[in-house]
Every structure is written in structure tokens, then in C-alpha cells.
Length: 141
Image (tube, rainbow, N blue to C red):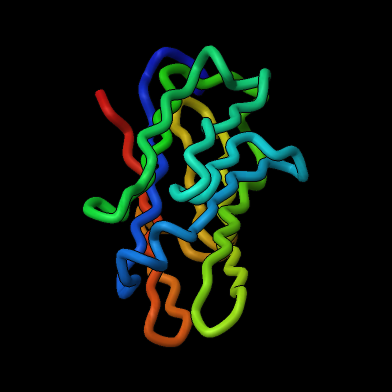
């Protein structure tokens, strides 16, 4: 149920070199709306947050020493229900694009979180060659 509970979505990058992390860009898209854009570190640009969530989320971005991005929803509204897609773009012998989907739905007083729409889990590991993306969802009480 929507409310003031905090929810965190995180994406961890495993198997990336420091140089690959410098070149990595990440987006969180909800129902085809680009909610959060994290540019590559080497560009030294700011994170872009869509106005629909700007006052309700905080973003802790990855860096070469800590390859984890955390997006914390400080409150949830009914509009947050929907299909989310992480899109990561990185360089590994050429430009590579990886996507992973998750679905957040409200049912009664519970928030249901589905990673890749099928798996009912709080974490999911996506392997792409020697690279891994670990998605997690946590409720912070």
C-alpha cells in the first residue's frame, strides 16, 4: 500500500574493470518514461531525475570503487506501480546494452515485487558473458 515506507532498488555490477565502470551509463525507465539517467563517470555530469519522482527519491550512484547504484523511494504513491526497466550501456570490445525488467504492484497492504516479471524474488542475477548485474529490492522500515 502506498505510504511513507522507504523502498530501495539497487543494481550491482560484477566483473567490470575500473575503466568499464568509468564508461558505464545507467537508466531506470518506468512504463517508457525515463525516470533516472546516470551518465558515465568520465563525463562528470549530474544525474537526471524525472519530475514525477524528483522530490521522493534519492540516488547513490556507482563509482569505480563501489559498483552499486541505489535508488531509494522515500515514499510510495499509487503512480509508482508499474513496469520498470534498468538499461545499462557499457564498453566491452564494443558498445553493449543490457536490460533487466521488474514489476512493482500493490495488493492490499503489501507491495509485490517481481523481477523479470516472472520471478517472485527480492533479488535477481543477470549474467551477460563474464559480467553480472545483480538487482535487489529492499523495504527499509
